[in-house]
Image (cartoon, rainbow, N blue to C red):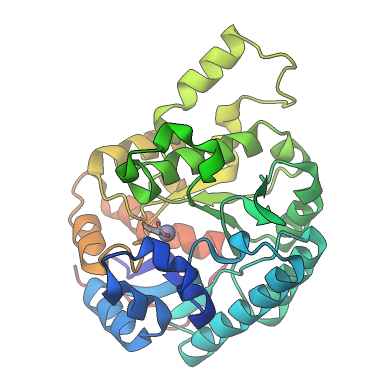
Length: 334
Ligand code: GRE
Ligand code: ZN
């Protein structure tokens, strides 16, 4: 029998951050309401699609685009309290990933500890690099100032979801003049894949071998390229060499999980399963940017995986990774 699904890359906005997220909503005003607070519609869509539980997170670019350190700290706290309220109303249907102010890594650690230990959050979701001071002053999470934060993530045994965002315009001349290349059509994937590679190549996962990172969109193209990356690193070492103990692929296969958010391609899914193993794939939608019904119709119609593997991707992999203990576990008749 097939189990009910869990979805992990599903976004909400605080009223105060929906205006900034408007850059992603041009021509799609209905998404604004869905991102704000239409939980009844979301619950109805989840019911119709066989999704029992949705893990909510703050919409991109969220805390990461707040240039002022104290404002980032305060907004993250408000966002997490807001998410906690949504969870408290329907704890069997909603859980949450924390937003964290990495403009101040120590404050981010404290906020994550509060979210996990006091609010019961299941992990942390970050929308790409952090900006601080000026829009072009950005930090990537391979940088050493974040490693104590990752020690906290590892010790709490929660996953770190590296969500997509656009590159800073100043460093993206190759996209200029071609608006279609930006955002989820292409730039998100390249930006996020590069960020994940930076983390893999930094030694972070040698220091924190139990740290787990989730990528959406069926792995941001990385399953297609890991072989060549390792092949060319060996054939053509860089100067200085990469300070890691294992192959890049080893970190990808042992420290990363991948969701189907926003990428409903059966061929790409099969490729990701071949790279990662079915235990590291998890269903997701990418609400409100994707239709829940479309994601579920695709996933429910998959004929290339057997029922045991389907159930892992639909639910049990996420249950284990997030240590979910949802009472009254239901099954679907599909
Ligand atoms: C996403 O969360 O994947 C997303 C955005 C903004 C625009 C499109 C999109 O955050 O898919
Ligand atoms: Zn998303």
